[in-house]
Image 1 (cartoon, rainbow, N blue to C red):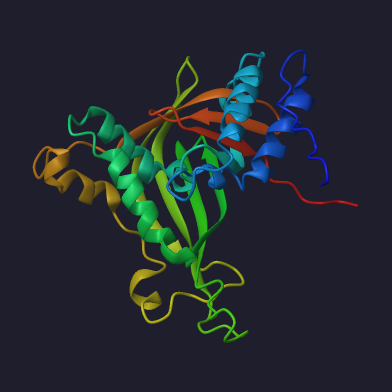
Image 2 (cartoon, rainbow, N blue to C red):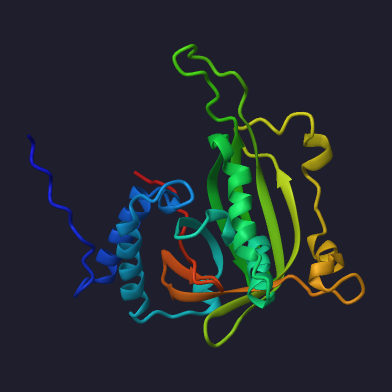
Length: 269
């Protein structure tokens, strides 16, 4: 019987910034941006969660300059220890509502949403990004999604039964500010679904549902559980910044979820 290769635990002592970031990116890749840690799917690789927690804590303890200058621009999400879609201001606002709501319904909503959009593996989350513009006071969040990526009947056929559809969900929040503690604060405003390059638009409903801005802020204030219809609570939200440098940013939401972003780059040979 072949011997099992020894498992190497995350090394955090005396590790430099470059080493820590390399280990973080390695774990992010091994866990599919953290998606393989979702216990709702299967309780696998949970030791990797603790490894990443140690690496994040070690890197966050090192000096970094958290400012508008270092945070501004575009970022791509490479890891989260909660559902990836929760990096959007829409879900951050729902989370902050849950933190102030005695019924604590936010977590239940996230689980139900995850089951709905990921059921049967029909929906796949692609690139997730954020663009921070402090001059305009706007944070733009987007995530790509495809539907029916692989739709075959195993053994019986080797052809796709349905074409692949998809889109890019873009959400905007304004009043973006950064406080002295490194907290990003904003107010959710609107969202839309646009064409995802290389993927067919959502059939039948694309002309009705896509390329239209939905006034989430106005509707939010009318909902009875937000205090509407006359004096509704605004969909405000925030994220704290644990670490940032030229290429990596680590944030934490109100419930403790970790989000790790990197700067997008173009390959030059």
